[in-house]
Image (cartoon, rainbow, N blue to C red; front, side, top):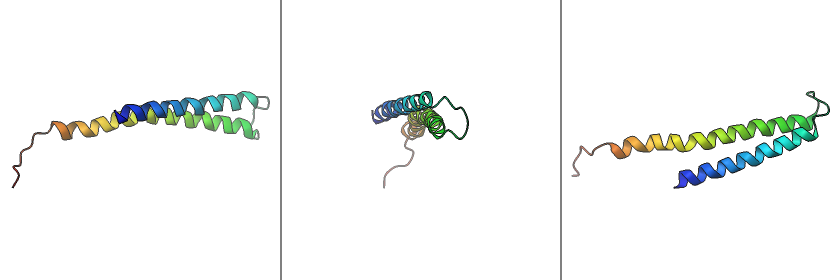
Length: 80
């Protein structure tokens, strides 16, 4: 349950960051060069949002892979 909530929250955060990046890029697209600080910040938000989205998708899958072998392994040792 927590994995699903974390994934959903990260996806919403990523969407907000990407939206801020799109707005920032749209407002500063007039001078398309590396000296345009607003455009560079917008591109940074776009890249960061994509990475947050990727982490939101991959993190719950990695946690499921780590939990699966531990729960399916039979107990071979007897308690003393």
